[in-house]
Amino acid sequence: MEAPRTSPAPAFTGPVPPAPAGPVAPAGPEPPDGPVAPAPAVPVSRVRRLAGPALWLFSAAAAFAYVGAVDPNEPGHYPVCPLFRVTGILCPGCGGLRSAHAFAHGDLITAFGANAVAVIGYFAFAGVMAVWLFGAWRGTPTRRFALPAPYWWALGGVALVFSVVRNLPFGSALAP
Image: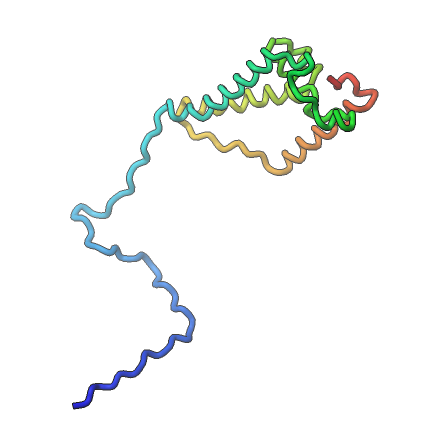
């Protein structure tokens, strides 16, 4: 007796067939009480919600405490700004440590005199932190703080103008 002949499977040369439309049936039988609902979100404890802002506040407080304790007005404690050392041009950050030192000691006039933009930044940081802490305390989700690109360009422009003006003779009041 002769074995039946099988023909080789034809090679697939056409396009891939589309996936079936509509919902896909579950693989197994459905539970007797109906479909399973997604698990509810696990509530996050207040301590865990406050961990992020608390870490940022602790870091900022530690930095201000260090700069408040180690006077940047005395030479040898901190490095000199590399741009100022090489070119003699004050960058937007020059005077920032002296400003932070005066700010930590509560002397806002001296802090503004050392670097006005830095002091405005300290207050902006405090505002963002207050909003973040308040939202974390209440348990309301806070939006991620992200500025659109035009705002970043505007902030860069302000820093550039501040840097140019403080290096000109009529802007010497802005120099540290």
